[in-house]
Structures are given as C-alpha cells and as structure tokens.
Amino acid sequence: MSRVYLAREATFRADGPGTEQWVKHDPKRGIRRESIRPAGLVVIDNFKKSWRLPRSGAPFLEGPSFLTRKDGRRMQDLIKRIKGGRIEAEVVGQDKVAGRSADIVQVSVGRAGTRRKFWVDKETGLRLRTEEVGPDGKVLSGSYYLSLDLAPGFSDADFAPPVGARIEFDDSKRFSSLEDAAKTGIRPRRPGYLPSGFALRVVELGRGGEVVTQRYANGLNVVSLSESRQGVPGHMRRRLGPDGSGFLPMPRGQKAYVWSGDGGRTFYLIGNLSEDELRRIADSVK
Image (cartoon, rainbow, N blue to C red; front, side, top):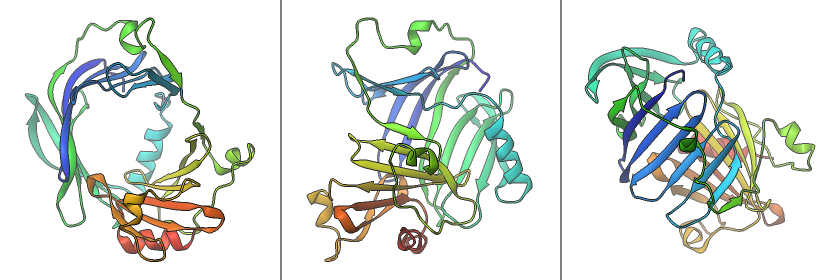
C-alpha cells in the first residue's frame, strides 16, 4: 500500500475470457485501471470519490470511494485472525512473476469456500499473482502482472476524469452497519446464520433504491445477500424451480441461490460456499 507502481495486469477465468489492463497505483493519489482488453473501461478512485467509464464515449459514473486508507486496522485484524487460527497462511513455494522473485503463500479459512494463493514479491511485498482455488483443487480465476515499473511518472491528472468529461452521479448509498442503514429507513431482511468468521462488511442501496445488498466476509471469502423489488429476469426465471427458487452458476466458480419472499421481494445469495451452506444461510433469512 505504500508503493508507487505501474503494472500491466492480466486476469483469467476457468469459465470465461480473461482481461488485460494497466494499473496505476499511488498511495497518496489513489488507483487507476485502464482496460487494454477489452478496450474502453476506465476505473479511477482517489480515496474521496470513484469514477467508472464503462466504454469509450460514455459518461463517467461518479460515486463514493471504494478504497480503504492505510490506517492499519484491516492489517491488525488479519494478523489477529491468523494468530487465532481462523485464517491459515503458509509459504508453499517460490516462483518468478514479471521477472521478479516471489514467495507463494497459500491462505485458507477453515472448510468454508475457496482458498487462495498469492505470489508475493520478495523485495517489495507487492502481490504479483493471485489464484482462487476451489474445494476440489481446480483453479477458478486469477490475475498476474506481465510487467512492473516501480518508478513511474504520474501526475494528478492520472487520478481524475479528463477535464470537460461528461459525468453522471451514482445514486447508490453505502452503510457500515445495519443500524446506520436503519436510521435512513432501510431495513433489509438479515441472515440468522452465517458460517464461523463471517461478519458484515457493508450495506449498499442501489438502482434507485430498488436493491439492497449486504456483503459479509471472513477475511478471504465474500457472501452477498441482495433483496430486490424488480423481480427475476426472464432468462433466469426459466432456470429456477416451479416455486421460483434454485441455484444459478456465476462467474469465478460462484453460485447464486435465488428465492422469492413476501411483498414481491426476490432474494439473491451469492458466494463460493457449498450449496448446503448457501441454502442454510438462505433458510435463516428473516
């Protein structure tokens, strides 16, 4: 987090095409991603605001920052979880990525969800490669640096939309707790059961207030619970059971359990846990 760098990054997925992008990182200015393949997508975040350009010629969508400043709290929580045995981490080998020597670190959290491997630069500590591995040992997705420049010449303009660019404002809202969301009248259904180690990370209100999403994490895996009043799209409805519920495959080896609730609500529970665990979480939502 303290390094300035420019990287050319490639991503890959077992169930679809990969991507390639330039990554510009400055701990004081923020981060910028420019897509090379497919071309057009730009994402900028300067710790205060974020901007997303979905394609060339479209307006930038402006919203709140999604970056966490370097305050040390998340790192302290990670160390506490490792020392407490809730997160297991071990060096399992060495390799070279983008011409740089790296340790391969495998991280897992109990039996829930996937595990990950990180190729960590021996000199800088930068993460040069990542792989997400399913319970069966299959690599689901990952990313790796093709090149790395540790002395790039950035300017303030790299971390803001171009002067004169068209900008539209994102009307989504984010809350750090269900209690904070409730103060504004947002009271989504919440799960009564979560696997050990999972805790609420954020509550998001989007699509004009029609969708509320809760994201829970255990330090490695993320489970999201979305509550929508827009109904299930037709192409998804055809793949569900007669009662409107069932599992749908998602990118990167994830699954979505979909079901209908009262008041015309539709629920989407998405994660890389087992179907039994996802259904158990869904059954506890009240």
